[in-house]
Image (cartoon, rainbow, N blue to C red):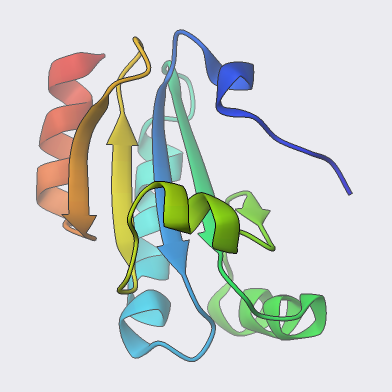
Length: 119
């Protein structure tokens, strides 16, 4: 029940991960996202996952099923359109300066490398 803005995370690297409940690749990415969250917990890094269109009930069931350990934003269709997201999961890594460093499929190794480089 809270509105979040990218400006809330100024000075941090932000990973936006766009997903939907019934996407196998989105489900498979959860352990990797949990690992990134744990690895960079004490760094200037913020992971925000953005669900596009699923109900709160579906999202709660997804969290229970996958043991997600990161912030999940819902009703993210408008922001997905702003970032040109059309497949799931899509990752958008944003630098401390607010500029996009990476945008594309969720690639844990690439995101980890770019995060380390830009911290």
